[in-house]
Length: 262
Image (tube, rainbow, N blue to C red; front, side, top):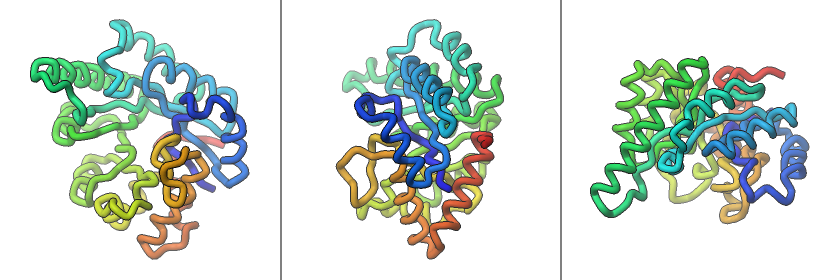
């Protein structure tokens, strides 16, 4: 059975056929799906979905690109949501410096907002004994530095991992995990493919990040949780393994990390 460890099923792209998408995933052998949040609203929606469907679990958290809009009492609100049934992790959280304001002062304010919200959510994860789902873009060294500041006490998965084997090893030495999306099926993704080929079998998950990043041959279309099979099959091809070996390893890793039970 397969586990999609990162799906944005609460997003509006699924508003017209969400139940059909969930049913299709089950029919295609997707055993569990982690519904991932990006702000307070999607955190509440993710919890509602997880409580409604036995095959779903969820994360709650504020994405770095939403950090500037977080209300002053965001942490108290997240603490309440994180205590609800179905929550398996804090996320997605982290740093994203890819599109900062052109004005240097405004850019620094944005960075500081992201750092503040990230630190607070790492503390929340540690306090609730939950793992964290990390979003990192154009902020590698600072993201690692903030995790190092915590002593890497919170188990983390770097989702949508597109870096090479050297950076992958930096994470694994710290006790963290990586997760691969449909990017591994793209012909212009040699770093992600090299990491998928070389990562330890006990240190990776597979995900869709749906509705984004649909794998080949669906690239450019809406991604769905069942597409996680195509991601895993490509990793199996890259490693010269049967797809069942990747399914077994990635699912075992995800069940332990997110503490999933049947």
